[in-house]
Image (cartoon, rainbow, N blue to C red; front, side):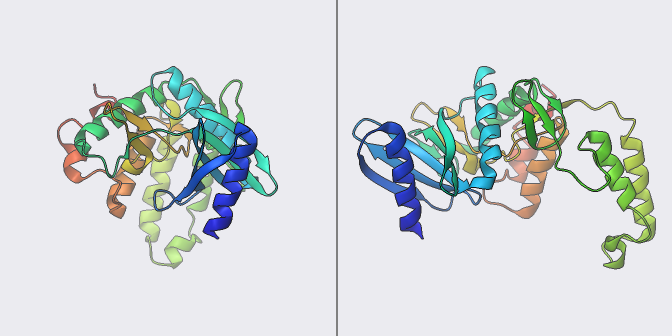
Length: 269
């Protein structure tokens, strides 16, 4: 399986660069969504990310996000090409020399502080709508995947959850929450409908594994799972979720609470 992935990456990169491939290898263990390979020719070295052809809209979205983020000062790889070959969607990116954030000798608190600054910049990017589907890259209009009873908007999302919190809720049947707790949660969702939140772009997967620290100790941000949501709340919630799960790439309790590592993300400074 690994050999076929590398062969496909070589073909995609070779057709784009119009050069013979010298070396190639698959990157293992740094991500779970895409198959990622490094391909090198006589004059270029690139990263080829691949997935099923149905995921092509996610590559369109990621290209847009990387370019918008670069415009506000967030460094990332250059997107050289995206497309579909046979049954595979692909993205070709410039190769960035350096160490993955998990492996870098730069203090993790320094990397997290920089990620906080990047998150604040990303939140400032002009967007419209709510959700994880980029439906219009010209104006940065996003929409949530459709649910029964939701129109893809923030208000629709809130109402969908309110409609789900009934006495017939499966979570009550499973013992996850009691009926009284369900009613309290429903009240909280009702209150959300009138809250004046600020909406902005979220990277969606801010973590050490999605960074490269180059030779100048610059932190490069990779691999978006972008969405438009409430900021900075959505980013902080994602970080806390990773911490609760105990993921290696998440922030420690000290990095999350101490040394002002998240002051920029939270928008306090």
